Every structure is written in structure tokens, then in C-alpha cells.
Length: 147
Image 1 (cartoon, rainbow, N blue to C red):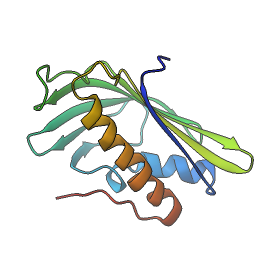
Image 2 (cartoon, rainbow, N blue to C red; image 1 turned 90 degrees about the vertical axis):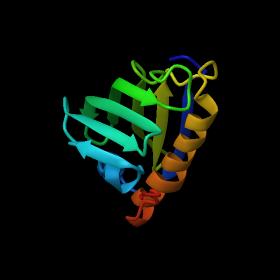
Image 3 (tube, helix red, strand yellow; image 1 turned 45 degrees about the vertical axis):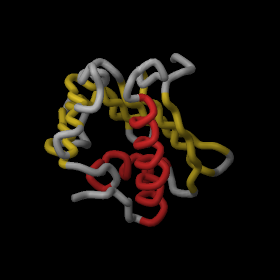
């Protein structure tokens, strides 16, 4: 794994199963319009936020209480000179036990500083993972800014 990939990590007191279930409940923590199945190996779902961001994810790993991986098979970001910067990247959630707590490690492989969208996308992921997914896990209520 490239050290420059965007990664963020946090710890919670909930079980790995509770964490896994919250991650799979994508609509509970990620804003925008999500169409398709988000909790089945091999399924594809799309994400749209206005006319700013579109991406299609394929779930390539779905190991209960351990790992979820999405391959970005198509994308269009209207704020970059190459709207397909996300295409071919991979989003990974790793779940592990850390001294009685559950660690969530989020990595967007391929989202690196050389990409035009890096700052905006890493800022957005920081919010959705730390400020929306984490509360969904800990309180049952995520904070997506759906419109």
C-alpha cells in the first residue's frame, strides 16, 4: 500500500460486527443519492451528489466483522480537469480488535496528493468517516448532510 493513500483511523467500544453493519449501511453515513445494494459481495451501487460527484462502486470484499472493499469502476468529478480521477481506485475499511476496542481503518487507495481532487476529497472523507460513520457506529445516528 502506498503511504500517500488517504487513510484515517479511529477506535470505538462497539463490536466488530456492529462496526461492519454500520459501514454496510452506506446511506446512514454518506451524503448524496445512493442507488443499489451496499451490503452484498459483488453488488454495485452508485453515488451521486448533485452534478458535482458521481461514482460507481463494486463491492469486491465483504468479510463480516473484518473488511469491506469497494472498487471504483466509474466516476465523474466535475471539479477536476480529469473527471475520472477516482476510476480504478479502491476504498477499504479494515476492522480489527485493539486492546478491547474496535479499530476502523479507512483507506482510499489511489487517492494520493498528486491528484487534483486530493484536498477536497480527503477533507470530505475525513468528515464522512470520522464525523458521520463514527457517530452511526457509536450512537446509531450518522450525520450525512443529505439534501
